[in-house]
Length: 446
Ligand code: CTP
Image: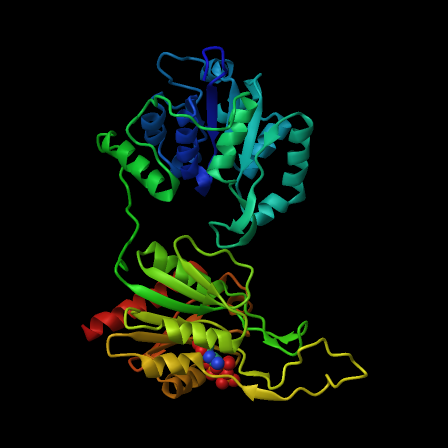
């Protein structure tokens, strides 16, 4: 950036789980030649310590109006210093304060004092984002000329799916550079803090935080993610299948694929190599997971059985595979009144779970699911025997907190060892409980 260019970014971090992404935003801005200073709400410091931002930015971080050595009025000095203020992540609370001129802490007072352009990157629960109060605050701020990098749709930290996810780091950096009047293409630049670290993606962020921890003299400690499935390979079936009646009509079911995709995501996060054979769903592939997309039960059978090689350690069949498929799907759209569509001859599909269980060697584990509305455990035990698998995950789909599409589930783990009934849990915890049980079965064999 040229010497006349505006390069001062005041990063205001408010208290949400996405606060850690502000570290990556900070680094992206530095790479583009910006100087970044950070102000944090007290709640934000619960998510990422101020020492992390101090190490990354190379400047003191303001969290309070008081006791700032050498800078008695930090909200005025930093607001005057800034060429742009970027609020990232912005909670519903800080948006509400900004909309109503509330200045009851350092972050909100600084924003009220800012004469420079302000850019906001919200991140919050989908219902908080959609709440009319938040939407009204959004409009008030937009009318006043505040810029927004809108939240995106996806899986939120609370497990809900919807709009509320912090926008991509690259988009936030580009938008900030655009406000500064610079091209959005990052160029190499000297970086204060830890200049040797140039992060990209999640691993880059971890590297950054590790580097900040190393230079913090023990002030920052890092809880490393559990990577207990490194070297393991999982094959997971997920979602519904669609069985064609004719080119435009099909038989389907209520499965959303959430359970299978969540297990896949957690297995990958724990270090495993994961392949999902997926029926038609509207979910994104979890990071690092291969997704093989199929439509019908027959295609799922072929895709799953051909991939269940000896290098796969565990197959988990979460898919709601159609039990029956039309015997003679029409090759053209059937015309009612002219052709018969009131009676459809059905034939049974092949059972993928039973096939995988019959193929498995002594080192492989095969897990099935039993979605039931009554006599849960008895049906699950019958399925365990009939399918020949190692574990059945039974869930009572008559319960609102455990039905298709829910973000929680109440499972029972049914094996030859017995029945382990669990309380209702968010899906990521359910996934971990299943993966832990698979590990126990493997270890038991070893
Ligand atoms: N499954 C499969 N292939 C099929 C049918 C089912 O892999 N063609 C798997 C599912 O992925 C799940 C388990 O088998 O893991 C469900 O068992 P199943 O007895 O088929 O359950 P339902 O379809 O609910 O049938 P039922 O009426 O016997 O309860």
